[in-house]
Length: 286
Image 1 (tube, rainbow, N blue to C red):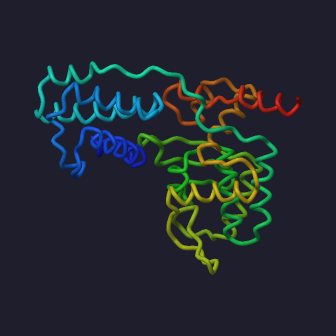
Image 2 (cartoon, rainbow, N blue to C red):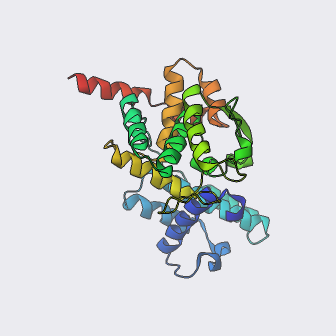
């Protein structure tokens, strides 16, 4: 089941499965758990326990989804019967409405983020400026950022080919004029050698010829937001900002979906944080 998921999804689902295994008193390695003996009452116990712990409806339902995925794999391997699988699939989801996840940055916050990068005259400053500008201009995921190579980006046209999108899907996007200038500054610093576009930099300022990790992108955005003295910001908030700004500019939601690389338009709708921004503006006027 886990091998069939993307690396990022694999980590989160494995964590949820570990929590579920603990609830039903399994203390061994996750891979050694006898999943084929799981029955309806075990899933009901996990669901109820998570509710008592105050977990959100989304977390509980994701856990149940992970468990169903494992049990379907058990069925495909001939470890459980069709009747057992049907019973397990009959466990009810938890209802509940969640507040929007993450946030959309204001134009003032974006300027502050850019400013702290510009003030850092080191190679890291130019790199971080380019990463943040690129993510805000295209809405690409941090997992996509780390896989961009020099060959994927056309400096003249601003065309960027995403070779390793979510679900192993490829797509093409374009940088605007401002972000192209910022990325060009980084490329001039980095050099034209082949390999990952964004690289780790040593404390001495040496640019290493390998790609950044997904966690490194997270830390770059978090630290720059802290330096800029804005509210905490995560890489996916830059993606939410991208979608929200598209919709604010009057771009139809289906085009926004395509630009963001979403399969389902409902996913794009969850990134629409225009109401939140309007509420924040209204509070500031009171």
